[in-house]
Amino acid sequence: MPLLDPPAEGASALPAGTFEGETVIVTGGGTGLGKAMAVEFARLGARIAILSRKAEHRDAGVAAVTALGDEAAGIACDIRQPDEIHAAFDAVETRLGAPGVLVNNAAGNFPVPAEDMSPNAWRTVIDIVLNGTFFCSREFGRRHLAAGSPGSIINIGAAYAWAGGPGFSHSAAGKAGVVNLTETLAVEWAPYGIRVNALVPGLFPHDDEVQAIRSVPERRKNDGARSPAGRVGYPHELGWAATFLASPYASYITGHTLVVDGANWQRRAMLMPEFVPIRDQLGKEPFSLD
Ligand code: NAP
Image 1 (cartoon, rainbow, N blue to C red):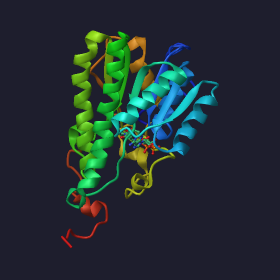
Image 2 (cartoon, rainbow, N blue to C red):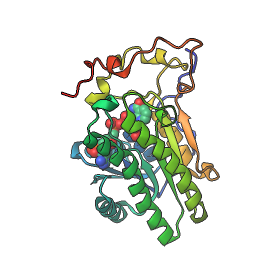
Image 3 (cartoon, protein in one colour):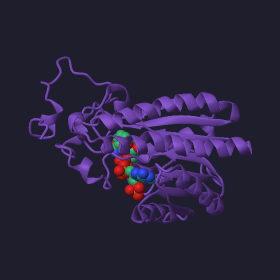
Image 4 (cartoon, helix red, strand yellow):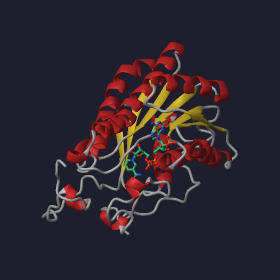
């Protein structure tokens, strides 16, 4: 195996209690990578607020945190709606205390060739990925500026922000915006003690993957061999990266995007594999206006 496996889940590079007394919001923290990050913050003493639309997702995230003996609250919120975000932040403050960390993790995604994409599909993904990230960050920033308190934001990106993402033009464009927004907000809010960083996960399969992602042809087949690392990422590894970036040990790091992908996005072959158009990769019939 080219890259070593990490220490087992449950280990931590940060001192116990690093987030003691701190409230951390994780959007979409009831499933997949959001849940894994919520759990790592909780292990270090944080109270966790999980914001998402579906009660069963929020309940799963809350259960994962409380199983560790930590405090958590699930709060209904569609991050496309600024009013709902405002109300959700009020509820977090009432139930757990003002959040010192915001993890903008929630996203929506499904593969579709650009020519088949409906305007509604485009708007929905951009609304969740880019607008939702901005609306939550804005709510967090305004409250901290008003209170004169420090804070930390972690935005979750994706490597196709730089390289483009055939089959994912909506999500790739949204994530490019998220990485760019990270850099702007870091500069605007550093004078107020607010750090803004991004994390880019590589291939991190997990059991909560939505059907649209699960059914990408060849997904979950030989995944490890598709990366120079020779393995996929473990969700708790992303949790370690998020907790480090949000911690006082990263207090001079802001405006940074940390890629956790085993160097997969930089890979090139001396001769690239024969090109396959995205319609063919997705098993789609030739495009027709009918
Ligand atoms: P996931 O399991 O599909 O989780 C997405 C979460 O977002 C769900 O909990 C969902 O909860 C929430 N959500 C979606 N729309 C929302 C909305 N409008 N308002 C509030 N919450 C909403 O995704 P994941 O694989 O864990 O990915 C987590 C993050 O990592 C995403 O930003 C993704 O783009 C990024 N990423 C993942 C991978 C990977 O390999 N898994 C690779 C690169 C980047 P509800 O349905 O309850 O709202």
